[in-house]
Length: 408
Image (cartoon, helix red, strand yellow):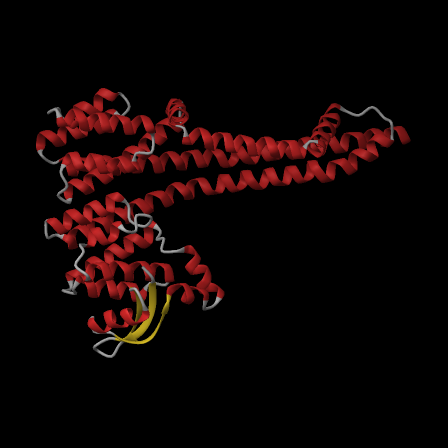
């Protein structure tokens, strides 16, 4: 069905804009007037998308995608509006009007239109699964069923804010080392590919015996300049091969097993996954979602294949009457702290609180571990770059000293 963008006046005389689904412009005008909106301008969305400045075009090209921070803010604002007594349709209209991205504005307008036509909010959101995850939609559906949509949206906002903060800490700890590595590699490639060949030509014309560092540097430079096309092809083939292996379940499983077996990286990855698993499961249980559906929904945040299979096996064991702590411990993949805290929560009836404590503990451990790694990596990478620079200086200066001695 075509989508029409409109501008108009509400019953209160306020200027509003949005989009509406209709068979034709006349039908769109009728739907708007029936909803209390007097349209002053209406055009099909395809034509509207071609108009405007290049910034608007770029924003439309990005579509209706929302970052985790924007989604948390949307949940917080929608919960606040509902708590203030604003009707759901009006709240969605208000949030759609203040959205900066045209794609997000269009998406929220479509959600509002579906809700206005009698659809539930969860069903309206399910038409935009590229923005709202199954976890988000499931919690909204549970909130609507229990007539507790406002607190559920608050929990979703809190969950999104914590996840964004956790991801920001991880990215912040790894950004500087990665930038240093990339810049250092780019500088070295430039020196070896463009500077060294010119210096090597002077040395070769002298017909003098060159020192070992100079010969190594000249050989490396000659290899890179002679076979750079083959090197790029090999790198591209490697990247494509790894990507194809990831799409293969067997290759993905092999990679995940290898990651878990690494001394430091494996432990850190398990802590990150367990923190997200515990935080998400706690949020679902506290929102009134039953344990089995919650475990089915939480699989999406478990990115490791082996751990995801352990969660699925745990779900089947719980269906047969076993406890979650017992079934998670049988896999041998989840840390003892998580298993024991889940068992304590099951015995005391406070499993949500225990999962929250586990998540907070693992988030602190991951943050501390990454800080320690960054503290070690920074001087280590500095020393490596300094060593490379010293090697290149020796390779260039030693022949110069030899030429000076010969001339004397």
